[in-house]
Length: 132
Image (cartoon, rainbow, N blue to C red):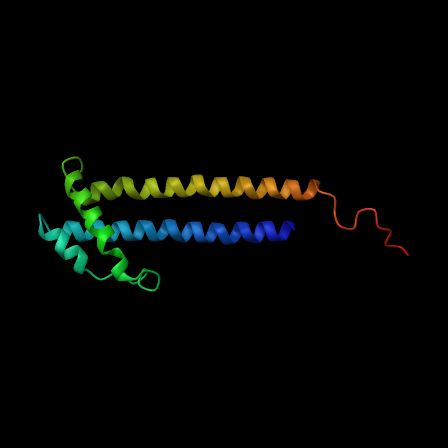
């Protein structure tokens, strides 16, 4: 039982880490696309840009049309607060990795709690005399 708990923890942690890494990579790509073009052209060009190679096997480009348009509109409005995409990326990546660390801490706490609980439960062979 304990081995299953830790296997699930490792599997979920790997998926959580992959999601965080892909989020940072996608936001860096999106901000780089916005930085390469100014004004109203940014929206049109970002929708036409191909996905980064790391994301191609995982995401269908058609799925991203509406989220891209929404994010680019939000980024264009946010330009007044963070004029350069490098400035935006300077706080997005640490924010994503901070969220990752909090999520990983929760996963670890759950795994430790389940490990402790599995040790407290009576085993299936408790009370059975194996000497006979």
